[in-house]
Length: 520
Image 1 (cartoon, rainbow, N blue to C red):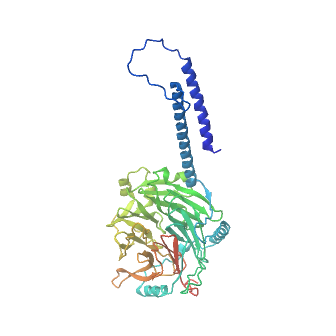
Image 2: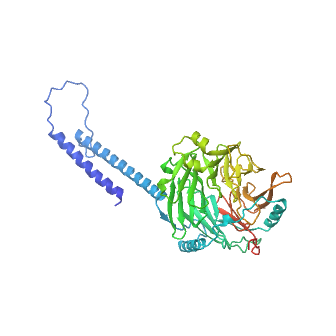
Image 3: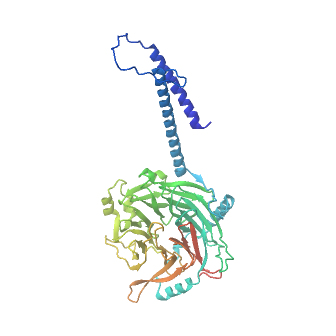
């Protein structure tokens, strides 16, 4: 017998006892003295007859009504209890610790045992990966000659395949810094995380033969879309994921366990607490995040989660946040209502959480730039001196900013502007131009194109010392049937790019096997 049936039976027995008690009280109550009824010409109404033809007493009819009401009350209470248990189950799935469990919703996905072994192997390699690559010389603006060399080199890239990795639309991508394998982590619309080992991937030839899709897995990590995922700079065996379910979680690859890092529900309701982006300081021990209700959130990972703080700095969505890699007290945010803001995080940390937005703006915003339409993303380059932005005004911009010489407040001025169609609509994820951080190549950026390609651009100064932008590659022409809207590249290896599609597929472009990296 189910829990709800037992509850109903128990409640029904209690109601029956109450009804019997009421009947006894009615029998024992003193009857009023009889009075002569007034004559009436109207016929007396007879009690309804039951199935046997006998007339029912009023008390019997009343008892049946009480029983029906009791049954309805018990059913309502059972429904209420079921709703509470469902809500509690949702809460547990959203907030409680969990372990990775491989799913099989995508054809070709591998099982739990292989996933566990591969993640453990990656965790072991991650501890040995060079974690101080920020100390290497960052890429500078390309010259006209180096831009031509980069363009020539990228012509050799091969399409290694477009493979379905997650059940739903790709919302986020991250290329792991492993230098021995091509490992791409994927976040989708439903809250699934996918892992694609594309090291051996190979697209089919013209005759449809020789295809190798590599190896892939996926598992459920959140209850809603995963907007961002990445590894901390000094913790490459722990994956951090942010979601529209208002939580930010971390997953230890070695143990497969996941736990909550930030819960926006403690500040705002679930409809406004979507986390859109997050970033780390250089040491990887502090997280900054932004949400759908105009909030900036900070947590020191060395302190309990309850010590996290949030400031409401806007009345509208903040879509992106980036922490300066050489001066972590400085950051930039991209705002739906047309703004790019340069922040002094040290001053923001000194403000009370309940500070009014105008006071925060006056005290903590160093400078800003106003777009004619919404700004969807803003990212520092590896040198911490250039900010790359994407906007719905169909322009990609680069801002030159010296974080050590901010001085007094003044409006930002772009150094580079380049036209690019960013009108993605409802069925294509928002475009966000991303810097490549590879230290051995000239500075370049990658962004999706509505023509279903991945475009690579290299900004460089002209003879008049005015920076320009050169298109150095269009990857995937006449190959993919959908737009690879979400992009990523390997942090240190040369010319390895991926793009995520609306159907859960990921495209991979890499040099031929005989390519030799500059640093090798």
